[in-house]
Image 1 (cartoon, one colour):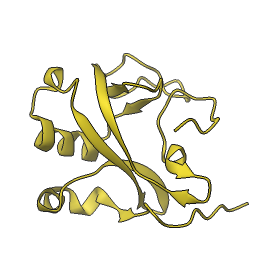
Image 2: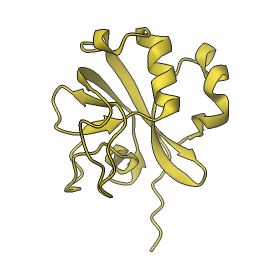
Image 3: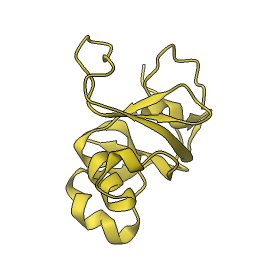
Length: 126
């Protein structure tokens, strides 16, 4: 998953395996409260996830937070140890990282879930 991006944030580009998008299952190591980290632009982070076997962290947007609550329960303090599949999706014309939601849960987040990229060719634009 190390893409060589000199950044601590897990992003869609981290799911590019050469020329193909791929998905990963990661184990949550910890949950950081909102404001514990700072984004590149200097703004305080939202709640963020730390993972085993990588130093990358994922700032949680509303969509991923909602899916995690449905999968792991409403108490984020109980999420560490949970194995979660993450996948690259396309949302509003940009690649993004989404918690992989089972089909029966996708209705609740369908508007913001985006389209699947896993297994598709990476298209780079100059």
